[in-house]
Length: 102
View 1 (cartoon, one colour):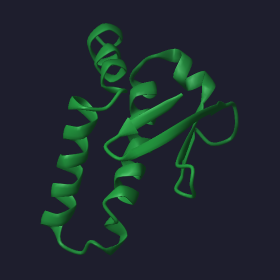
View 2 (cartoon, rainbow, N blue to C red):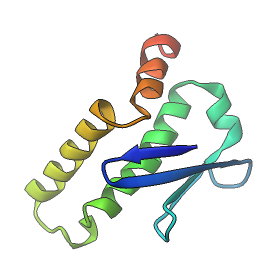
View 3 (cartoon, rainbow, N blue to C red):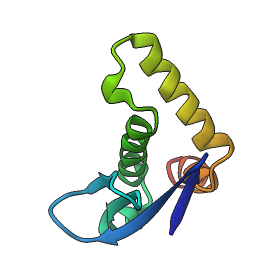
View 4 (cartoon, rainbow, N blue to C red):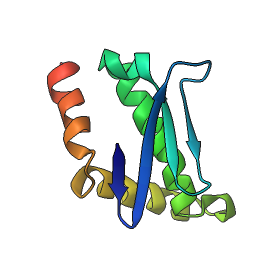
C-alpha cells in the first residue's frame, strides 16, 4: 500500500512486533504498522495510523528546525488539511471515524 500526501509517497508495511508502529524517513518513506492493531479497525487503529502520519508531517515540514509555535501549528494544520481533503487515505480515516467508532 502507498499513501500519497502532496508530493510524498509513503509506503505501508505491516508486521507483528514489539513496536506498534514506526516511521522511516530514509527513502523510500515507509510506515510500519502492527498488523494486529490495524485489523481491529477501532480507535487504536486510527490513533496508530495518525500518529505515524504525524511523523511524516514532522519530516515533510522540517519541523526539527521549527522553533516558533505558529510555524508548528501551521505545518500541522496544513498537513491535516492535506490528509483529509486530498490524500488517498482520507476515505479510510473517514470510514474508521464514521462507521467503526460510532
